[in-house]
Image (cartoon, rainbow, N blue to C red; front, side):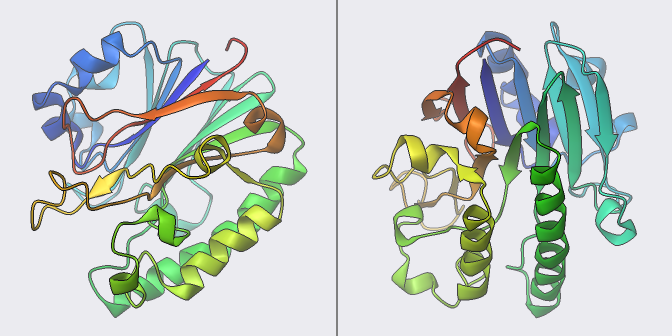
Length: 256
């Protein structure tokens, strides 16, 4: 079973760069996408239901902003749109699909990089989302939460960590939050598979960061221990640049 997470930085932009042609060859069972920057009325049929896939979406109220989606080869038993928290759901940040005893979630956590106001929004999100993640664990299901978490956890997870200690995405409070999450029993699948591989998934558009591989690992598949133990291999797809993020691919044992 192959699960992919990809921040598209605009589904229409990614489509123009060949994302859906790549999707057709990706052999993915489930693909979680983030930062759609579109409403359903802005998305054509190929974006909503690519050949061979069912498509589900949770879009933001604001046009051209945020939004998440899930493409799956198998029709889910149930789809849950949003967290049931009005201010978070207005930004289109959470979508869950259930397949038997497995749940796959597409998540787009807020960024605080634009200033203190949005950083406070991020902190408020993290506090409430921690409670939600504890509830998910209590369900006793196998769960994979895919997405742009907008946090680099350890120095290995970004190239210039010393210069970013006071910047959003690598703040001590954010990193401590992620440590607490993992201490509760969640598993960072990439880091478990590859303890010493940076695994960058995002690069700034400034200073030739992509060409020089000056990146951050802020896209994760974080899962319950049972499904994490079934992870066999992972990769970051960089052959074609669809976005300022690269797709994160994890292969798990078993079929969906």
